[in-house]
Amino acid sequence: MTLPEKTTPSLLLDHQLCFALYSTALAMNKVYRKLLKELDLTYPQYLVMMVLWEREGVTVSEIGERLFLDSATLTPLLKRLEAAALLKRQRAANDERQVIITLTPEGRALKDRATAVPAGVLCATDCEPDKLLGLKNELETLRRNLMRSG
Image 1 (cartoon, one colour):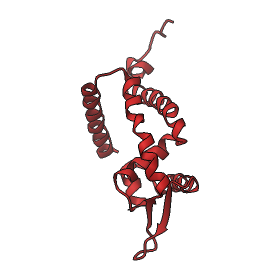
Image 2: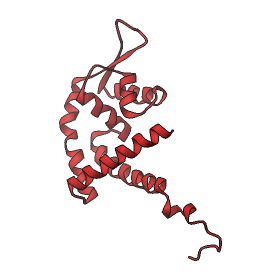
Image 3: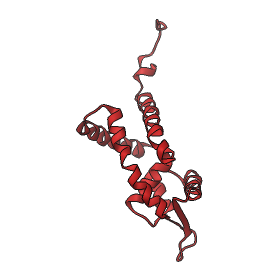
């Protein structure tokens, strides 16, 4: 393939950080889709469950802050997880505007089955754990910087 005479290098797709991140995220989601199929979870649902496995009794807004999701995106996710009997949504007694999310026994039990997911992802990356930890830290720094700029 030949490039047009006046190609601007900064506009080449393969030179874009955003495309490298985007296409990597697509590949990562494909790996997760395969691994999460056995748990009958989507990737966003898995993220919600991980938040709840760390700490139960959190509000919808706390989950949203943790996952960088707004309530319009989160509410349908939570409703599907509730329909699957993995969690319960309840209005807070002291403030009815807040919805408290807790796991059901089935939701807690799913955690044991999910322990194989991180190992499956690690295997799919074909990278050393230390290298992945460094990459994760760099991406977190990049995210913080971008959020400050946005």
